[in-house]
Image 1 (tube, rainbow, N blue to C red):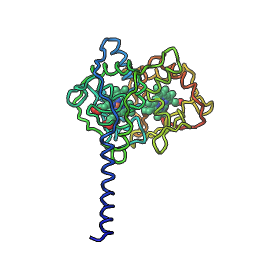
Image 2: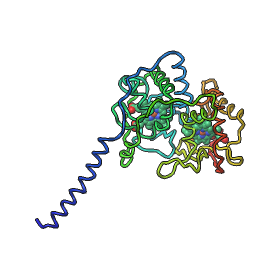
Image 3: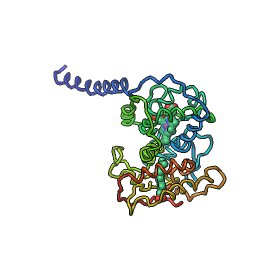
Image 4: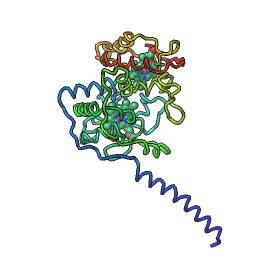
Length: 334
Ligand code: HEC
Ligand code: HEC
């Protein structure tokens, strides 16, 4: 064989071999994960109450992990909460990111199709460290990077509550996102570095920030750039698009204290706005139908039962963020 031919073949081999070796390294060493803890979370009444409150009314886990009535205002949950959903149709919480093949798992305690056979430690690890029971990395649409900040106590309470939910037999496939996301997502999960504590409730601003993280207020009310990073120049200034043909065409609101374009509500108005959805959330008042394509992803019905004190803490926090002049038309009428 001529020398140049050999060299060329060698190059070709390297061209194939290098990516294969790199992929091997990535798949062998990532995601970074630690063994799930062997703990059993407490299941007393107070813990269960706290868990239910956080799951349903603060973190709104059911918002992503359920089906929704897309014809009504606020996309109320349809059927058993937590039974999982193909987000490619709902995309409720992450607007732009409509990836075919992305599913929010069945997180009910069904032994085969849900998380009934997982240990408490495995569920805790999935929520805050982003790996599934078998070590598979969870796609970033599951906001585990934010839930890292969830205190050990709160995370345990959520797990305790999840055990008591109605099991649903819905079969939801594991997500499969295409290249390059399938590689990128392997680098994101990280084990926790130690115990996690919540700020004391007495520190209104810090506790409000904590709740705003768990409740994804910051997530939904801040736009992302092309690389998917939060735009700090528009932190909490709204404008994040939520587009779903036939369901919604909305932009999140500016929640900063900018006097012209930001949130103008007083604390009292803020709390009453959230609580004004209580009757509907409880099923005592009918949730209005909306014109096709005019619903909103803002989880009004989940948050309707947030405690006034917690809403006040969130309000206190929102008043401390940098005012940003950014006029947004949300495209939603209440
Ligand atoms: C913004 C949407 C969203 C929210 C909010 C959300 N999740 Fe998820 N979650 C997902 C998606 C999407 C997946 C699947 C990711 C994948 O398959 O790669 C997932 C996966 C999971 C898994 C792993 C299931 C499995 O079979 O691997 C658990 C457990 C879980 N979520 C629990 C929760 C809990 C508890 C909350 C609330 C504290 C929550 N999620 C809030 C979107 C969400
Ligand atoms: C899933 C995304 C999402 C989450 C999570 C979310 N929001 Fe929103 N929010 C929106 C969108 C979109 C709008 C605009 C449409 C509407 O008003 O319904 C909005 C509207 C609002 C409004 C009404 C503003 C006005 O002047 O009309 C307030 C107040 C608000 N959000 C506060 C919050 C707070 C506080 C949190 C966390 C506790 C939160 N949001 C979480 C998407 C979200």
